[in-house]
Length: 196
Image 1: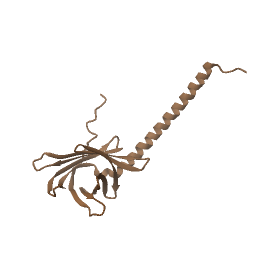
Image 2: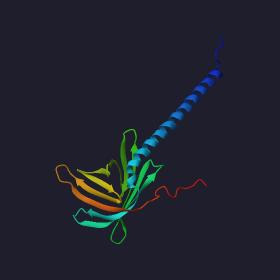
Image 3: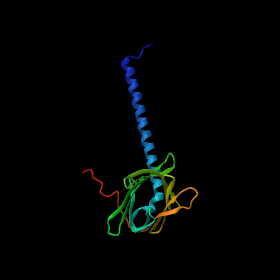
Image 4: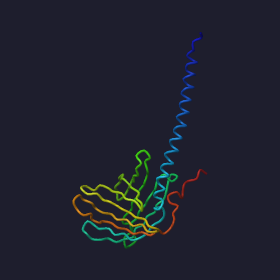
C-alpha cells in the first residue's frame, strides 16, 4: 500500500480549500441576492413618498411663537431601490435656508424592521421608522419627552405632524407641514459617474 506524500497531501488540502471557497462564494452570492430582493420589496411600501414636494410648514418655537415657512422635500430610491433617501429644506420669509435635514431609510430583513439614519442641525441619530397604511411614522427621544412624527400621503398631498409627547400629559404639537407633490425626481440616482 502506497502512503500519500507531503506534496499530495498539500494538493488535496488545496483542492478542498478551493471547493469550500467556491461553495462559500456561491452561497454568499445567493444570500446577497436574497437580501437585496427583500430590501427592494420592503422599499416598495414607501414608493408613494418619491418625488419633489413643496408647501407650508409651521414650527412652534420654544417661546411659544409660531414660525411659518416653506418646506421642500426631495425623496427617491438609491442603491438599486434598496434604500430611500430624503432631503428636507425649510425656507424663511426671505428665501433663506432655515432648516436642512437628510435621512436614509433602510430595511433589515433579519429583524423585519425599518430604520432611519437622520442628520439635521448638527445632530445625527438612528430611529425606528414605520410605514403605515397611508404614510409613515417615526420617533426620536428628547430627554424626558419623545418627539413623534406622523405623516399621511393621500394622492399628491403629504401632511406631517410633529408632537412632543411626555408621559401623563397631552401631546403638544410642535410642527406641521402640508406639501403638494410638484413633480417627479431622478434624485439621487441622477448624475452617477459613468465608467468612461
